Image 1 (cartoon, helix red, strand yellow):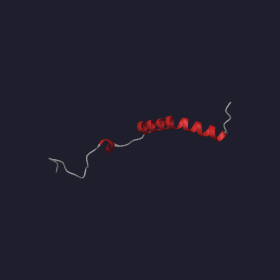
Image 2 (cartoon, helix red, strand yellow):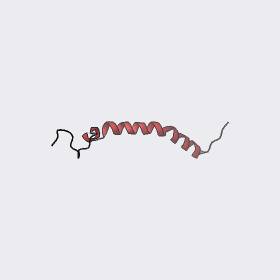
Image 3 (cartoon, one colour):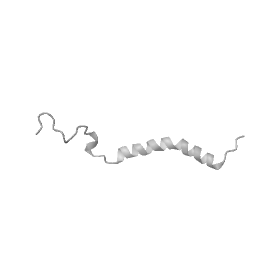
Image 4 (cartoon, helix red, strand yellow):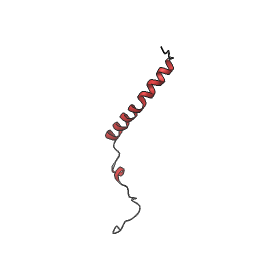
Length: 53
């Protein structure tokens, strides 16, 4: 039988939950936070491309 101290149990549970909770929060932010249209704009607006004035 293994006897673990309370801090070790708390640390273990924290490590086990860290990755799934991180992905859950990241997915919530991706779906619910307004990132604006600049998120999809990869070109530099300061540079003029061909045919632009």
